[in-house]
Length: 119
Length: 108
Image 1 (cartoon, each protein chain N blue to C red):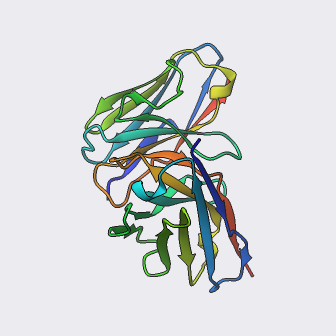
Image 2: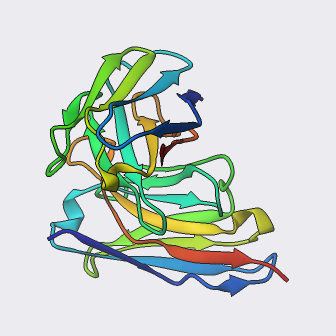
């Protein structure tokens, strides 16, 4: 069974940093591209970042480019999102999502982790 | 960036009736369109990909159609568990993979 479990969400002050993790199991993690998607309270879904299976290709949404860094560790079956210079508008539930093999829609999602940016 | 527009924002339908949700792209996305269902407090769940292919385990009452810029998600006979928010997402021209703003399906 495919499982994605996010962790690392917290209450953080504006300007602070946080690292989110996504532990993957039930599939060959190294073969799949992965994404981070977030959802602000009461709002819709916003794609944030993509990393290819071998980490050779990485993309970011303009809203987080230069502040967030996606990475993965296939030895640990884990996906990460390093978030720096956090702003109030980064407050959201952050989901990791797997891309379908060879395609770019998200076939499995984690349960999400809440990041609250507030003083 | 491709803009995805869903309509209506809220749809009120009675159980057992048919629901039709629309998604429009600002430019052609071919058939690279997915639909997701999200219930309160839960993660999104993939329903449809390739505009019309049901994901694994999705009941046959869910169907998708369209190509290019106009897409439709139809739920043929609404069950109580179908009342949720539905999002479309294009994955043809990316980054970014853009989502629509969502349609909330309410019980009438």
